[in-house]
Image 1 (tube, rainbow, N blue to C red):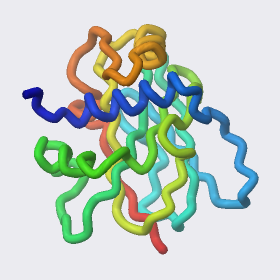
Image 2 (image 1 turned 180 degrees about the horizontal axis):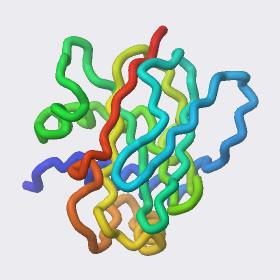
Image 3 (image 1 turned 60 degrees about the vertical axis):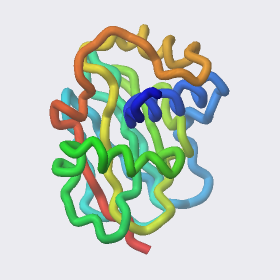
Length: 178
């Protein structure tokens, strides 16, 4: 039996949604607040401590050579560890993703914001704490990763690369207020 790997599960979800042509635009007609998060090698910039429920996140990638993602998973009530502490515990991260897809996944190619949201539309609706991680393999060739995601048919994108960006510190958290 194969062991559960959160990065693999998230990659499979992203691949299926990219293949299905999930929404990738930044249009927002709802009047809801939008917050831009910036990805750099290997961190998120502009992550506020709190946002209101219904805030829609977008991701801009300032990297010149790495594709980045923002995977947002709601942290269970009663969990007091920081995002950095949680990602050091594979069982805790696995538990965050065991109940279904993450709250949001947004992917951005180097120097931009394409393809965009691939799980949900980037909106965080449920109050609570959220963990943000990037599980793209370090050094993965961006076009190869995006193409593998589009053609993987539900399997995790298989591309050469090193450990996930989250292992290099690409982790953050925020709290959604009701």
